[in-house]
Image (cartoon, rainbow, N blue to C red):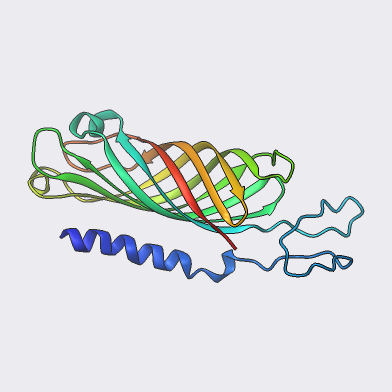
Length: 212
Protein backbone atom coordinates (compact mmCIF):
# COMPACT_ATOMS: atom_id res chain seq x y z
CA UNK A 1 0.00 0.00 0.00
CA UNK A 2 1.56 3.33 -1.08
CA UNK A 3 2.15 6.34 1.15
CA UNK A 4 -0.58 8.30 -0.65
CA UNK A 5 -3.02 5.43 -0.25
CA UNK A 6 -2.30 5.08 3.48
CA UNK A 7 -3.00 8.72 4.26
CA UNK A 8 -5.82 8.72 1.70
CA UNK A 9 -7.59 6.17 3.90
CA UNK A 10 -7.12 8.53 6.81
CA UNK A 11 -8.50 11.49 4.90
CA UNK A 12 -11.52 9.48 3.84
CA UNK A 13 -12.21 8.39 7.42
CA UNK A 14 -11.90 11.98 8.60
CA UNK A 15 -14.35 13.14 5.92
CA UNK A 16 -16.88 10.53 7.01
CA UNK A 17 -16.44 11.63 10.61
CA UNK A 18 -17.18 15.26 9.79
CA UNK A 19 -20.22 14.27 7.75
CA UNK A 20 -22.05 12.63 10.65
CA UNK A 21 -24.95 15.05 11.13
CA UNK A 22 -26.48 13.29 14.11
CA UNK A 23 -23.46 14.01 16.24
CA UNK A 24 -24.09 17.76 16.16
CA UNK A 25 -27.41 18.09 17.97
CA UNK A 26 -29.37 21.33 18.21
CA UNK A 27 -28.83 23.52 21.26
CA UNK A 28 -31.65 23.75 23.75
CA UNK A 29 -32.31 27.20 25.19
CA UNK A 30 -34.61 27.94 28.13
CA UNK A 31 -37.86 29.74 27.22
CA UNK A 32 -37.02 32.72 29.40
CA UNK A 33 -33.63 33.32 27.73
CA UNK A 34 -33.64 36.33 25.43
CA UNK A 35 -30.06 35.88 24.16
CA UNK A 36 -30.96 33.30 21.50
CA UNK A 37 -28.19 31.54 19.62
CA UNK A 38 -25.99 31.28 22.70
CA UNK A 39 -24.71 27.90 23.95
CA UNK A 40 -25.65 27.76 27.60
CA UNK A 41 -26.54 25.20 30.17
CA UNK A 42 -29.19 25.64 32.80
CA UNK A 43 -28.96 22.87 35.36
CA UNK A 44 -32.73 22.54 35.26
CA UNK A 45 -33.20 22.26 39.01
CA UNK A 46 -36.77 23.34 38.48
CA UNK A 47 -37.26 20.93 35.60
CA UNK A 48 -37.25 23.57 32.85
CA UNK A 49 -33.54 23.78 32.12
CA UNK A 50 -31.83 23.24 28.81
CA UNK A 51 -29.23 20.69 27.81
CA UNK A 52 -25.58 21.55 27.44
CA UNK A 53 -24.46 20.56 23.97
CA UNK A 54 -21.00 21.86 23.10
CA UNK A 55 -19.86 20.54 19.76
CA UNK A 56 -16.27 20.86 18.62
CA UNK A 57 -13.87 19.39 16.12
CA UNK A 58 -10.19 19.12 16.94
CA UNK A 59 -6.92 17.92 15.47
CA UNK A 60 -4.77 15.73 17.70
CA UNK A 61 -1.21 14.46 17.54
CA UNK A 62 1.53 13.00 19.69
CA UNK A 63 3.67 10.01 20.60
CA UNK A 64 2.62 6.41 19.92
CA UNK A 65 4.27 3.18 21.14
CA UNK A 66 3.46 -0.54 21.41
CA UNK A 67 3.96 -3.00 24.24
CA UNK A 68 4.50 -6.79 24.08
CA UNK A 69 5.90 -8.61 21.04
CA UNK A 70 4.91 -5.81 18.69
CA UNK A 71 6.71 -3.34 20.95
CA UNK A 72 9.85 -5.49 20.80
CA UNK A 73 9.84 -5.24 17.00
CA UNK A 74 8.95 -1.55 16.66
CA UNK A 75 10.20 1.75 18.00
CA UNK A 76 8.34 4.86 19.20
CA UNK A 77 6.38 6.65 16.51
CA UNK A 78 3.89 9.44 16.03
CA UNK A 79 0.18 9.74 15.40
CA UNK A 80 -2.24 12.27 13.96
CA UNK A 81 -5.98 12.28 14.30
CA UNK A 82 -9.27 14.10 14.02
CA UNK A 83 -11.95 14.14 16.72
CA UNK A 84 -15.54 15.33 16.97
CA UNK A 85 -16.78 15.93 20.51
CA UNK A 86 -20.15 16.63 22.06
CA UNK A 87 -21.21 17.06 25.70
CA UNK A 88 -24.90 16.09 25.98
CA UNK A 89 -24.86 16.02 29.80
CA UNK A 90 -22.99 18.08 32.43
CA UNK A 91 -20.70 15.20 33.41
CA UNK A 92 -20.67 13.16 30.21
CA UNK A 93 -18.92 13.75 26.90
CA UNK A 94 -19.00 11.71 23.71
CA UNK A 95 -16.26 11.55 21.11
CA UNK A 96 -15.87 10.05 17.64
CA UNK A 97 -12.45 9.98 16.07
CA UNK A 98 -9.97 8.82 13.48
CA UNK A 99 -6.33 8.18 14.37
CA UNK A 100 -3.45 7.26 12.08
CA UNK A 101 -0.01 6.26 13.34
CA UNK A 102 3.31 4.92 12.11
CA UNK A 103 5.93 3.09 14.17
CA UNK A 104 9.26 2.12 12.54
CA UNK A 105 10.49 -1.47 12.72
CA UNK A 106 13.74 -1.85 14.64
CA UNK A 107 15.80 -4.18 12.45
CA UNK A 108 14.26 -3.87 8.98
CA UNK A 109 13.19 -1.09 6.67
CA UNK A 110 9.57 -0.10 6.93
CA UNK A 111 7.01 0.75 9.53
CA UNK A 112 3.78 -0.46 11.07
CA UNK A 113 0.94 1.79 9.95
CA UNK A 114 -2.28 1.87 11.91
CA UNK A 115 -5.64 3.36 10.89
CA UNK A 116 -8.21 3.50 13.69
CA UNK A 117 -11.81 4.66 13.97
CA UNK A 118 -13.48 4.60 17.35
CA UNK A 119 -15.75 6.13 19.95
CA UNK A 120 -15.00 7.28 23.50
CA UNK A 121 -17.29 8.14 26.41
CA UNK A 122 -15.76 10.69 28.79
CA UNK A 123 -16.84 11.41 32.37
CA UNK A 124 -15.66 14.38 34.40
CA UNK A 125 -16.70 17.61 36.15
CA UNK A 126 -16.72 21.15 34.84
CA UNK A 127 -14.37 23.34 36.85
CA UNK A 128 -13.65 27.05 36.84
CA UNK A 129 -15.95 30.05 36.86
CA UNK A 130 -17.51 29.17 33.50
CA UNK A 131 -16.96 25.42 33.55
CA UNK A 132 -14.19 25.76 30.98
CA UNK A 133 -11.75 23.35 32.64
CA UNK A 134 -12.83 19.72 32.19
CA UNK A 135 -10.68 16.89 33.53
CA UNK A 136 -11.95 13.47 32.51
CA UNK A 137 -11.50 9.74 32.37
CA UNK A 138 -12.90 7.75 29.49
CA UNK A 139 -13.39 4.35 27.89
CA UNK A 140 -14.57 3.28 24.48
CA UNK A 141 -14.27 0.93 21.54
CA UNK A 142 -12.58 1.03 18.14
CA UNK A 143 -11.37 -0.96 15.15
CA UNK A 144 -7.92 -0.64 13.56
CA UNK A 145 -6.18 -1.76 10.40
CA UNK A 146 -2.52 -2.66 11.04
CA UNK A 147 -0.46 -2.49 7.85
CA UNK A 148 3.32 -3.20 7.69
CA UNK A 149 5.14 -1.40 4.89
CA UNK A 150 8.28 -1.80 2.75
CA UNK A 151 10.54 -4.75 3.75
CA UNK A 152 8.25 -5.57 6.68
CA UNK A 153 5.57 -6.72 4.24
CA UNK A 154 7.58 -9.93 3.68
CA UNK A 155 7.66 -10.86 7.41
CA UNK A 156 4.40 -9.45 8.74
CA UNK A 157 0.78 -9.66 7.64
CA UNK A 158 -1.96 -7.06 7.52
CA UNK A 159 -4.42 -7.37 10.36
CA UNK A 160 -7.73 -5.91 11.53
CA UNK A 161 -7.95 -5.65 15.32
CA UNK A 162 -10.32 -4.32 17.97
CA UNK A 163 -9.27 -1.74 20.51
CA UNK A 164 -10.60 -0.71 23.93
CA UNK A 165 -9.14 2.75 24.74
CA UNK A 166 -8.81 3.82 28.39
CA UNK A 167 -8.03 7.53 28.60
CA UNK A 168 -7.35 10.24 31.17
CA UNK A 169 -6.81 13.90 30.40
CA UNK A 170 -8.08 17.44 30.54
CA UNK A 171 -9.90 19.68 28.06
CA UNK A 172 -10.03 23.48 28.21
CA UNK A 173 -12.35 25.79 26.33
CA UNK A 174 -11.60 29.50 25.89
CA UNK A 175 -14.02 31.32 23.65
CA UNK A 176 -14.43 29.38 20.43
CA UNK A 177 -11.12 27.54 20.84
CA UNK A 178 -10.66 24.20 22.58
CA UNK A 179 -7.41 22.59 23.70
CA UNK A 180 -6.50 19.51 25.65
CA UNK A 181 -3.99 16.84 26.61
CA UNK A 182 -4.44 13.15 27.35
CA UNK A 183 -2.80 9.80 27.89
CA UNK A 184 -4.45 6.69 26.43
CA UNK A 185 -3.81 3.00 26.99
CA UNK A 186 -5.40 0.88 24.26
CA UNK A 187 -6.14 -2.79 24.87
CA UNK A 188 -5.70 -4.49 21.48
CA UNK A 189 -7.37 -7.81 20.66
CA UNK A 190 -7.11 -10.31 17.82
CA UNK A 191 -3.55 -9.57 16.67
CA UNK A 192 -2.33 -11.83 13.89
CA UNK A 193 0.61 -10.07 12.26
CA UNK A 194 2.63 -13.24 11.89
CA UNK A 195 5.85 -13.00 13.90
CA UNK A 196 4.54 -10.30 16.22
CA UNK A 197 1.52 -11.77 17.96
CA UNK A 198 0.59 -9.44 20.79
CA UNK A 199 0.91 -5.90 22.00
CA UNK A 200 -1.17 -3.03 23.33
CA UNK A 201 -0.79 0.67 22.52
CA UNK A 202 0.21 3.63 24.66
CA UNK A 203 -0.01 7.16 23.37
CA UNK A 204 0.24 10.71 24.65
CA UNK A 205 -1.35 13.53 22.68
CA UNK A 206 -2.38 17.16 22.48
CA UNK A 207 -5.59 18.49 20.88
CA UNK A 208 -6.48 21.85 19.38
CA UNK A 209 -9.78 22.70 17.76
CA UNK A 210 -12.80 24.90 17.51
CA UNK A 211 -16.23 24.89 19.16
CA UNK A 212 -19.51 25.37 17.28
